[in-house]
Image (cartoon, rainbow, N blue to C red; front, side, top):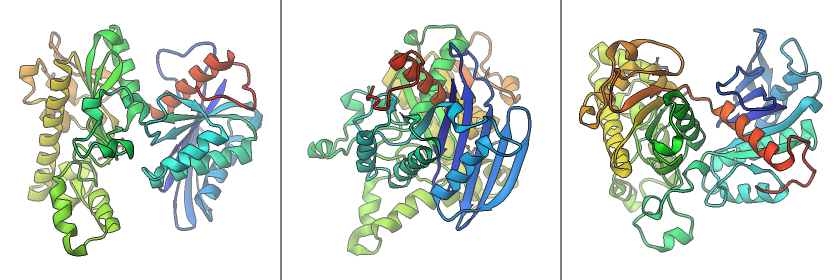
Length: 416
Ligand code: AMP
């Protein structure tokens, strides 16, 4: 079965095509086709890579997000990098949906009713949920009645106990949907399952802390294969310091800044989401590579940004371990987690009392999924490549197989 995955960003759209046969392979296969389109105003840059090594890079005109996504999808069955003869070859389309609220705890077949409730949930994640809904519309226009599935970034955290997801504000907040949801769940779940395979252990027997450190950063405490706590909350702004996001700050700062109406909600949003974090502190960049480079060149604010990032990361790991009552493995994933030996070494430096012993040489080596702790380390330390699109494809395959044994779904699919 060929499965197309759509992963929307605020001004970009990524898409991958996978093929899964009778069973899900233990190791993620290469995508048959990968495309990305990024746009600014009316100009968009498209990049495509197919499994046989063909590459395409071109600039196109796009009036809107929908236009851009449509142009990207057209490349699937046209031109030199095409991967299918026609749209009919695609059996199911999976969408990464950032916010499923409290309602969606599983991958779900998209029906008109589901779309309506995703539109309602857009008040929690306006940029993301609207982009995802537009993606669904474009797929319907281009691929007709193909089955579409929503895979939620919040779903993996839906089993968190009340103590972890209820804010200690007024109890009425809960009824208004103001609670902790958590994000990056698709990758936290994928990493937990993959770690169990790498360690040759049952997932149910493991207490894991997964560190998703990319442009956005979050930790998850995982027990019995479920997230029992995570650092992001009502929005992806809570928790760790990030590239341009502050992470948790004293809410009293916000009321202090807003008092007298000097700062409006939109300005506050921009300050905390786009002008804070590594960029806000260093004044140099939101990219950890440039922060480390500047720090090594003696830039004091870049060093402070690195130190805050590591301090908060280490503190967050400690919190997650305290929630779990111990940990069998610590996992680093996403851009910084996979690539920055400096961040991993600094984060693990003071975790010796938790049984974490990093192998300095292994930590410096590049590579795919790997163990970087010394032989005999009580807590194993792993690096796992984030494979969000593959994880979404896998969920689509599971759902499709469970619902109709791999046959094409009826045109009125049910929510699972
Ligand atoms: P992601 O959101 O997972 O794509 O991660 C993107 C971020 O990963 C970038 O903004 C960089 O900060 C970081 N990154 C990528 N490569 C490296 C590297 N070699 N060293 C440090 N950070 C890196």
